Image (tube, rainbow over all chains, first blue to last red):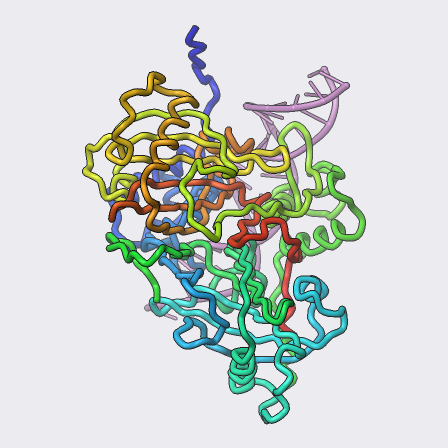
Length: 253
Length: 253
DNA sequence: TAGTGGTCTAGACCACGGT
DNA sequence: CCGTGGTCTAGACCACTAT
């Protein structure tokens, strides 16, 4: 027997609304165009503003919309492809990497970081802050933790902090022989600091990429990079050498 | 520089609430324990239920909580590490892969799929549905698109659909020589079908892993896998179960 | 049936960005 | 200053699960 469920279940309003809006975005709007404001849209669809917002939030999560307080809601461009996995393993800061060092401090890291680094709970660690920009927009913020023991020859460097010291730490790191990497991706929400750097509100969805770098039989560095989940598509092109011609997709360097 | 930012900016209530709850989860609750219901919690903190829910939603997004209608809110276990990238490339369905074939149909795919496959807009494609289970819980649902031209010798197979045909398609795929893969990860929201299979509500956040398989100089198959973003941490290395941090925030100082 | 989280409403005020 | 999206309230009803 067919067991044809008649589905007397009413679809939530915001879900239906999201579908309608999504189709409207495809057919009646172009990238960058601004939508009517939330109060007008809610009135037009005959729902409360909160319900309308629930639909907009979903569409923003899917990268279809971009909302900015004091400005309005605009149609978002397709997500930017951001290369995360490299063909051959390389240290952060190696030639051609997409990150710009911002700052560097030295301190005892949070316990979670110490655990991942497999260092002692009170071992000093350099923390390098870096930023990644693509198509003129900030797409990711990174904290790179380097145990002091990984870069022992840092005494000759004058700068106690700042970009100069960050570059020095990265340069010293290159001296080690990289034995392997270990990468994980998970969903998170932007901290206050990340949010500021990524030009989003705190709590905005981010893709957290955690990379451990191995050298001399231990974890020599730990990178925690947070990418804007609304605008980024992380690519891991570890293809066997064949470069495929891409369609209309956008790829970052 | 002291940079003592006085920041007279009032922190949103739900944000502060989230912090308080997060600390309480660390110190006063254990995994699997059920929290008081939303109405009681809201009353206890002196906020409206909607505000309390905003905090709970964030914590659920970060994998700290699990909420189930009709049941309650429980403390979630740490995210499961799910291996996605393998060192050596392999076809889906190869020995030891974590997926279980469920079904297979043949039809003309959605235009977006046809574009990614670089096939004609009306070329027939096998669609294999597969499911992935980890620690007894469904963690991912996959749609694997295989152009009919990639598996030409499927005439001898009787089963027109079902798991048997799915396995047959995968088996035929193995005959091709895999030349490379191309993988991307982005944030999405669960469709109605995915939600059912993942035991979540529609719209739940998912990590969408899109993989293109290359053979004979073209795209021989396309996999679109949606992972539960609340319970999964995608790992891209040989070690799938390594314990990394599960901390909510990072300290820059 | 009782209790849970999910949806929805109709307001209000606030923070921010441009004019 | 005005208009925007962001936060918050105090309700109401619905859908689901367990007992």
